[in-house]
Image (cartoon, rainbow, N blue to C red):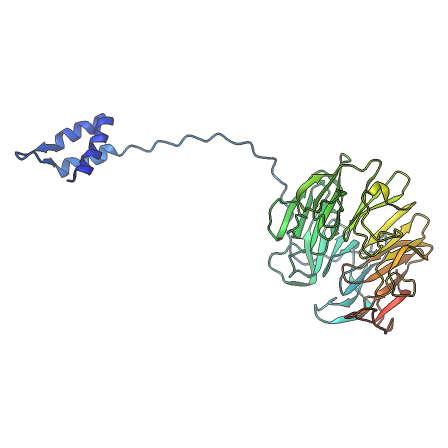
Length: 438
C-alpha cells in the first residue's frame, strides 16, 4: 500500500475510535520495516469508516415576496357572445380597421381580416358579443362580455397575443380571462384584471413590461404591476394610475414622455413619476402621455414632431404643466396624427397629414387644432403607419379619412391618388367620408 493511502487512514484513525480498533488489527510491520495491511480486516475498516448519513441542516428560509397571481391560461377558440349593448368604437391596425357596433358586433375591413392573406375592402361581420376593441401594429384584441379577451392577427413579431407557438392567428383565440380593460402598444399588449393586477406580453426590450431585464420578447403573460386602477400602452412604454392615486411608468422614454428634462433612458421596472401638480393621467399612445386637470383641460408630454400634440409649434414640451392643449376634453386618440373629442361633441385634428388623415382636404401637416365635425361620440386613429383617422357621430355614422390602400376605409372607391412624398402609397381620402353606420 502506498504511503499516501496509509497516512489518509491514519487521519481517520485519529478521529474515529471504532476505526482505530480495526486499524490496529490490520496494520503490521515486517522485518524490513515495511507497513502491511490485511485486506480482509481493511474491508471491515471501510464499513466502520462509512458513517450513516447525517441529515443536512435545514437552511433558514429567506422570506419570499407575495407570490404573483398566476394568469389564466391562454388558447382555445374565442366564444361567440350574444347581442349586448355597448358603446360604439372604432380602431385600426396597420392594414385594416375594426368597427364595434352598439349591439356588440365587430365588423372588419382591410387586409388579413379572415384568411390572413386576402383583402376585404368592405366592412364584413367578424365577431359578436364584444364590449371593446384595441389594435396594435398587426394584432387586434376583443374584450368579450364575460371578461374574456380574444385576439387575432400577426403574432410573429414578439408575441403580442401571449402565444409562444403561434405565428399568425387567423381566427380569434382566448388570450386571457377575468379582464377589466386592455391596451395595445405597437408590439405589446397589457391586460388589467378585475383584481387590479396588470399583466402584459410581447415586446419588452425597452422595459415596457416591467421585468427589469434585457429579454426582448415575453411570449407568455407576465405581471407588470399590482393595485392598478387604469393603464395605457404607448408604443414602447406603459403609463399606470394606481388605486392609491399615484402614477407609475415603465418602458421607453425616447421623447421625454416621463417629463425629465434631457433624460431619455428607458425604465426597466415600474417607477413612480413625480406627480404633476393638480394633474392626473388621461392616457398614452404613440410616444405621448396625456394628463388632465380637474376642469378637464388636456395637457401633453412627449413627441410633437408633426404638431400632433395640437400645439401651434413643433417641439417637445418641457413639462406637462406648461403644455395645455384644449379644454373640456372627453377623449383623445393619438398616433402621428391626433383626434381630440370635447365633451360638447366637437372633434378636432392635428399633426401628420401625408395621406389626408387630418381631414382638412390637404396633405400638409397641421399645427394647431383643425375643426372637423360637431355631434361626435367617439374618435380613433389607426395603429402606427396606418395613417387613418376615424369619427363616430352621435347618430351612429362612422367617418374615416386617410390611407385606404388596403380598404381600411371600407370602400375601395374612396381615393385614387398617391401620397405627397417619395415611396408613399395610395389610395387615400383627404377628408372625412361616410364609411359605415353602427
